[in-house]
Image (tube, rainbow, N blue to C red; front, side, top):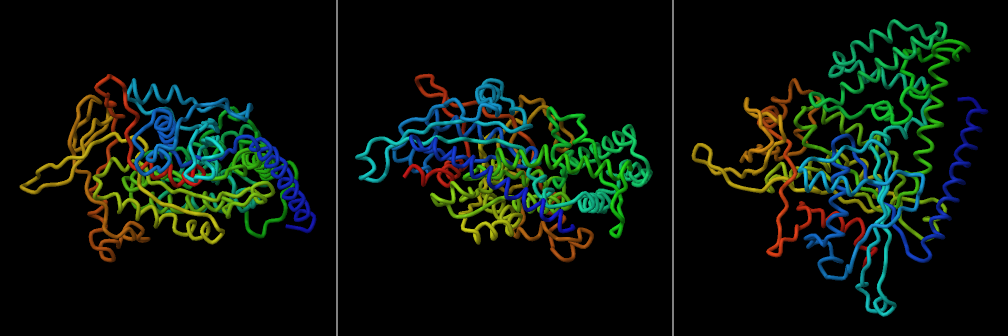
Length: 504
């Protein structure tokens, strides 16, 4: 990068920070009457973002069973109700439709595909005698739901096209991706970076790149490190030039791209992607968050094998490296807003017997250990837990060959298969999903071909695990016929960490 480019980047950074300060000032002004707390809800595909947010609101609004959430357990929370959201240009999170899907139809709601927002106002009595004398308190919770894949784009802001290309091609040529990426790699090899720009050729190469990324995310591979994130979730940008580029093989000592070449076209579109897609997301949504929960489908990666786990670790490192953690203060919340609490949650804990929940939590802690250390160093509070925002199973004990095993009871989704049997979505079964390994590190062995020698039990530990997807539960009712709130595992603990201090 030359001196002029560095100067322009510095001005861009200053301009972005100035915009963020103005936005924070506007938020602070609106908080003078009723304070607000902006909580980001994110996670990579199928991690349960929509379910988590729906269950959180449902339990607060309907007075769910939340024994660890001190404001509810102490009966200091007097109510919670939905309000019009503050940002008129952001889609509303469709809470009502998602509740109908879970409760009435017993199907999981559609996954997050764009940014959406919901405001929930919590009314409470302070735990402090002095503050109670001032009257009941109110807190606006602004819940921002966004795809975790979009976070993978934030590191692109610090990279040029050549760096992006080199990293993308290195991943595509890795042993676990070579077969998946073969059609794209052939198309890329047939493209001359210094040849004349050609729109049909650019579209074909970009389409091949997107097909490769989508194949990586399929259940059989469950890979996570798949930037650019909007290529998998384009929304209304589908087909735009900003989403019509792909990496090219550029020598490290290559001269600057000549005008009118394929490389120049791809570089221009890569920069447009950063300008028109990534920066607005960072400025308008991500940089305004106060707290963050990151949902991680650890079991899905374990099902797919060691490569998926290693890829998830890299992706989470990239995602969490984009955060702006720090200790909260009145001045910093206006000038440079920081995320002062980050919760990492391993979802779908109901797919395991509770005896394995601590092991699931340990695996997640190992996955995010570097990001956790960085966030703590910056002054943020960090928590790691295993949870299920909606509990789809019950626990039981089954006998197998004279041995009692901790099992789970639930209704598998239609089409789920186990031991050659395909389930119809109506039949409840009891199953022993297997035990997670005692040592989380055994799942992170780098050379799977020799894992059996290095980590006894590694191969068998993965082979014996079976995680099915279950239908949402039938909700219990009271003697008076009232439907209870959605059951969960440790949602109350998540709420206590995320908002408990603000209701004290």
